[in-house]
Amino acid sequence: MTISRRDVIGIAAAGLAAGATPAWAQRAPKAAPLTSTLGLDATHYGVRPGSPDDQTRILQRALEEAARANVPLALPPGVYRTGLLNLSNGAQLVGARGATKFVFTGGPSLLTAAGANSIGIRDITFDGGDIALPQRRGLIHCSAGRDVRIVDCEIVRSGGNGIWLENVAGEVRGNIINHIATTAVVSFDAQGLLVAQNTITSTNDNGIEILRTAIGDDGTQVIDNRIEDIKAGPGGSGQYGNAINAFRAGNVIVRGNRIRNCDYSAVRGNSASNIQITGNSVSDVREVALYSEFAFEGAVIANNTVDRAAVGVSVANFNEGGRIAVVQGNIIRNLLPKRPIATAPEDDAGIGIYIEADSAVSGNVIENAPAFGIVAGWGKYLRDVAITGNVIRKAFIGIGVSVADGAGTALVNGNMISDSPRGAVVGLDHAKPVTPDLTREGAARFKQIALGTNTVR
Image (tube, rainbow, N blue to C red):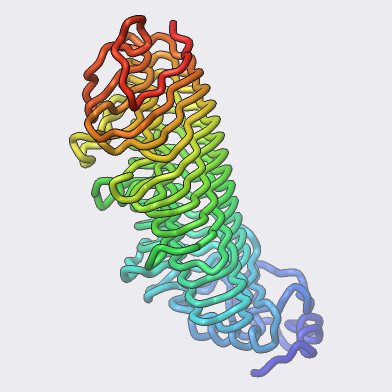
């Protein structure tokens, strides 16, 4: 059966009125008549909501016909059992939110699109049934597509990833994604992607991964998502257990996300230059909450709140080329005394902010840090760090600055430091305190520390 746009209005109006109504249709929920603007009713192809049969073949035919007519395929409320469905250019799937459900019967994915543009998937629940998927596959899997939109869907019980995208431009918005065997949303080499307003819970690897095969511009925006209960199921020392992970992806914006209960980090930028991590609310993460590490240049970490993490903010790996950061206006409190067991044994915990090179740390408020409020440098890896205008309360040491051989310059000025029993500003050899409180009258001076006027009590 071939259908054109001209035929759609007639089908929607006459549709099931002609001829006897099959028994299955009498039992199925009744859908309102569909017009050409709403889409083509899938039941006209024999698709049966609530049928116990696998409907892969019929659904595939309906999808192809609707795409050729350049109209959405509308699925009435009900359960549809299906295996792999291929989406071609212009394919649009529309359901009734909370009432239209695809149940996966097996295959490499449930929906896949390769080189197809203008794909739309909306208001459908996709239940993966915990059926194992091959590696590097998602229950919804799209590659090399422009204007791909996955909106207001629910994706549950995927035996692999929830959504897997490669070389895709478009948006993943307003979806509920939970009980995922690996990662909820994976993007490789995005071409202009928005991941926004999704609710992601209970994944076994990571929440959202923004990745590139080589270091380069990416520009994905990860905005206003709610991400909770992220496990580091495969183990490791930080590859897993992160709410949001940007790897090799430049110019990524991570803003306004609510993140809670992660085995490792809330946001981890690895070799991700010009990353912006702003306005996020983070609680109960067990390693570094907000991380910029390895070969990056440029990070803005500002106006976030962190409550209960091993380390609030870490801008690290000057030895790998990691440099240039602004850490500003964050509230960081109730730091944990230990990191997860698998992390390197020399990695400290109980630190508000850790910083190394070519960076400004200003206007932050840090409270209840078992080790340090702020640490600048690791051995010789310290250069041109300004620590100004911060408020640090109840830290064992307020500010620790490397005084090891070869360490560069740090400015420590205008900070307010209170209730720091080991000292307000202390020189360090790596993690080891090696000086008394440098703010005390008569204390030794180090040429690499420009110690201004700080308020200490």
